[in-house]
View 1 (cartoon, helix red, strand yellow):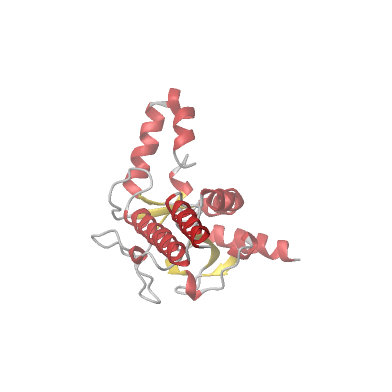
View 2 (view 1 turned 135 degrees about the vertical axis):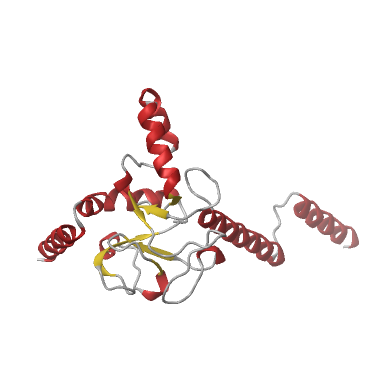
Length: 216
């Protein structure tokens, strides 16, 4: 019996060392690390331009995939693509799908010196890493997702009033957790973003008209 007990103890020790045996404490520690990593990644993405990877500067902008940029970096990127059109196809593989300046929406909120953007309703900061935000394409306001009813159904993002200014448009979920979600959103909202390339008033009328016809 004594020998059997020692054998079991040795086996447990070997399992712990090989990381096959996972205790509740190990699991909690792992989950805490993953949560901290996700938070750090979110803060990093909100604090830096998705194109230049440099600190976010005003004026800032976002695209339909939910990435956030310094607008000047977008301009520089487009100019560079125009000058080096020969390798544009290769660049497209590693850069966001931005071909025109109208593919991004300038953020109406003020951008802090540290790259932070605060929701004008809740006061939540984008660089806290704990809150989710959406951007309204019609007005450019970045709002805390807690102020609206957010659904996983992409169609629910269409024909929504900005809770801050009341302008009807669609919203973009910003800084998505994974690339698949961001890409699905970009493809779905591509058509609607084109409607706002006209003058604001015309765009609003076209958008409202099409939204109404889709509901019928």
